[in-house]
Length: 385
Image (tube, rainbow, N blue to C red; front, side):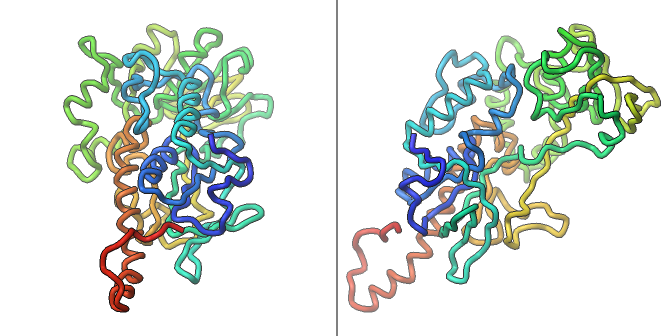
């Protein structure tokens, strides 16, 4: 795999056709298509290893999409197509993917600032160097800055607390009563695992629609694909409705209590010492709290006019108002599958086509100048820098 902790040979020059920020599934997927176009590009990854978002998840994490629906373009996911890959299998697959297609990756390369240069190129400032590029793909995904509510400060210091990103395995959580806060798939899965060794209570702020993992002997995603539900865009009536709330896959509050003995409580509204207060007025004394409360985007390093006044990214299927700047891997970027490993390829291919169009438009003036000077109108395509 073409990985260098400082610089890779493919990006030692000052200028690139495309700079991709983020070495996860979205970054790898777009580079599969960039490689086909023959562009000079590089993946800039802030961490010391590829796919850090996966490495930061708990040890027993298992995908709810079967292997047949968990592959990036050009390389099937190995193993039983109907089985469910583990976190470690995903990491190995992504490493193999980068190696198979010879994708240039620079580790320990955090982008501190992205801005437009006076020459029409984009400038990316890293710790000790600057890279310029014609086009930028921000593929940092939805798991950026862990979010925890401010009331964590009201709990005693001897109460064990961690965001889900810091949770690895049950034996690292102190004995006693554990409160898991967050009613998404992450909260439910962590609560299930902890229930074997701890007394667990799950706080659910917003009820999500539970869906079974398998229906009539088929995996849920087989049915969703067959019914073309995953093709519904965020602009469609159904897509808008689905994007407003997430779903629980393979879990439900009823199953959690009956099978795992986990009590389900409403939203946490307060905390004091070792006690937590819920929306229904009930209280619970806790020894540990796992905050499965999601993430927030952090684009403070992006100095480009691509945001709404409230800080939300302004884009249409990842294409921003600034020509040559794109985002990839966002939740509901275009469809429900936009942030899922097995479907990010659709948006990646779309962005790659936009990149090709923009690159051709930049080369057009020089071609017209050559024709007016008496040069033949047809010939080899413009050279890549």
